[in-house]
Length: 264
Length: 301
Image (tube, rainbow over all chains, first blue to last red; front, side, top):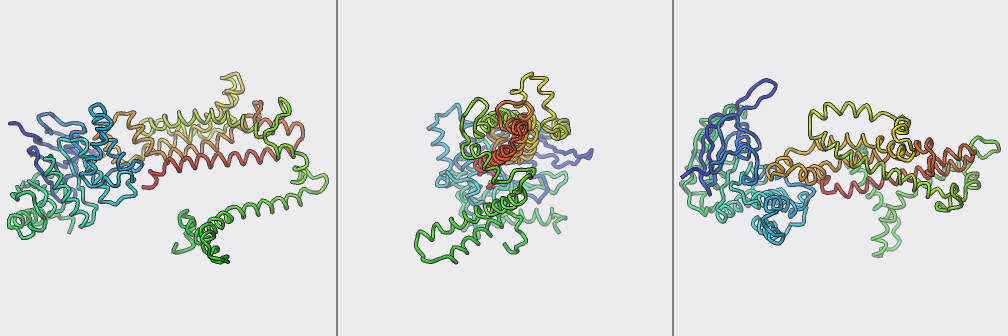
């Protein structure tokens, strides 16, 4: 059986003013269908670059990204991205933001009524159907991110890429959204890759946690499988041994072995 | 609002205005009925906007009357203007003969030319600006040229366009077109260059093609810039048409002024100036209001 998403010997360098900086080196990773994988690491370790490579927004310097054995070298709707700052178009309503994506991807395949039902279904999924006629400036940060997730899900991607989706939110809103994402992942069985720098978030949501070493020339330091049963309940996990152990090993990786020097 | 010195900011001065309005409303409160509670602040606000200009215009008229009221003055006084050109002032749309028509009709003829020239400039300007804004090399190559052409006065284009079109009507329209297109191109290009990378990423992930990107991302995102360009453009085209008509003749308001000068009807000229000013002001406000309506969503963010 072949791999679902395969990152094969990826290197990535940027050129600026004749100076070459290597950001990523020797990235090898295989992700299965339906898996939830978090990528964690200190700022500047190339997490976002890695996500952009998978999204096709930037190109690899060497190596390749394979999705179902086909090489990824340009962006496409089978790899939806939920951006850190939501990236909703401010002149469109919540509904129209999702509609833009749905019409583009399903314009020829579904009837108008089917598309409407599908948009509403996705807004329901993130509990945003009530605000469908509001503009992004009229809703809160957490709501914007929900719509961003709805837009990502609405194009039925093979992989949903989440770039620090909850980074700009307060702790309570963040917890709500994490629960929503867990529910969606459970019900849709979708493959998700999330970038985060929150250890608890990574352990709570992920099947596996990919830990990155510090840049430049960052690479995958360690991959931790989180053997927690699903569905996971935030409160039950607080004293769960597996949870505590997983949390500890990620913390140790980040703060003992790969301590971020510049942050001191 | 913390200091009165921040009045340059439109938002804070707006707050000041409404606060003053609310204050004066409570001051003049004889009975606290629902009607007066609701409409009195609005009325106060309206009066605050309308009364000061009226007072200033009246003051200006009085000074003017005093300065040019005596016999043998070089320019007519307001009373003289009223006496000479009453027909022009009270009825803008009379038709008394092929060359003797109301100023409103003349203005409409000029506006027709502006509509054609400016309309074309808007379409071509936005398209060219979009292309230039998208390409770094087009910007580097063309921006300096546009910056130079932008400074050429409207009338300097007239001889060339008369030579090219051999007719006054298309020449006048071309002068408007060429005068108003530069700010539209330049502002659109800046707006397109400033489209946030996030929106471009969204478009890329959805695989929007060039045309979809233009309509769905580029135009709405750059709309505030585009409308700034359009507003400067309509002002310039109104400047250009009056000057161009003076030279090309015809029915427009510009030619009317030249004609009145040749027949020493100074009062008529003053009335025409007032018409031109008011129409130019309305055009400017019109584009500004359309811009506000269209860009509401964009600028709210």
